[in-house]
Length: 418
Image (cartoon, rainbow, N blue to C red; front, side, top):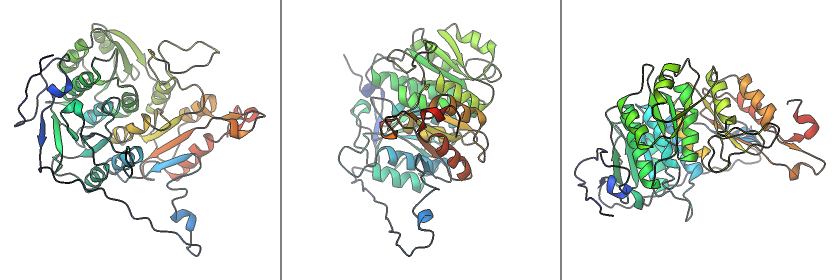
């Protein structure tokens, strides 16, 4: 295949077709020369026998309980840094990413769409930055991650999405777009290029109601299926062009008709087979997505995600879950790498930091509470919950309740709730 040489003097505007290789589609700039990347290591202070409140100072229960772990950032920038280092500890060979995505704090839609780059083959965690300067939390995390560079994007160490600051000392590829719709379409083209083909599945979400769109980030990171946006009035041009590039895909609308209207759904049918997933209320919407599968699961039979199907199909214990606050949309992008690594699992949305919604509690009681038989708990499967944000985002009471519903129980007790 003939490759087109691209100038590195200016950022790339995506105009090439998916048939081209990703390396030929991305312009790479080496800013700051080839300066050595410094891996930093946090200091760890030992808590001694005479330390008052030793358990709390060790981080229990604010950081971790037996079934949960909190990434306790005061804002999504800090959460993204913490998640990236949880997924890529970067303290031994083989634990560094090849490339990192730098998404804009000013554009939650672009940040959500960039979650798809965590999927194979790039496996790029998400960090966040404004356009003015790289925040210290992001800079420190990037130094520790020390990305080596990905061949699929001309050796870039950082993929800049939209209006973000340039981190010094890193080779960077720039993805640009005039608005969130164009940026999402450009990200989709990159993912299609590096994967070698466009995905057969596309997730369409509202550009106006972020709490309903947020769960798409975790799925995109795990599956490689892109996130595209529609408005309340219709399908913007960049989204239409992106859908055409997927050649009649299966389109999954995330949200009820009050979020994405039936009129918009009808317009989407021109571009592929349309299915709607969702329920009224952001928590219930996220739960519905967590349990969804296409083709549908057979009633009274085990349900799981299988190759060629779409959806988490979380209808049994033994999985991971990521709890995020619907008032912090950037946290969905920040936490997305957790859905695509470790225990793998969906993002569940709360709408009140002090309360675990009944829809989420019932979801766990109906499908996810781990149980054990006469063989004992050591033969059981287990759940794990990630809690994203500090206690202003998710309270300790909610974390404690989540820990309780995730606890393994005798089979006879699993139907009775915690």
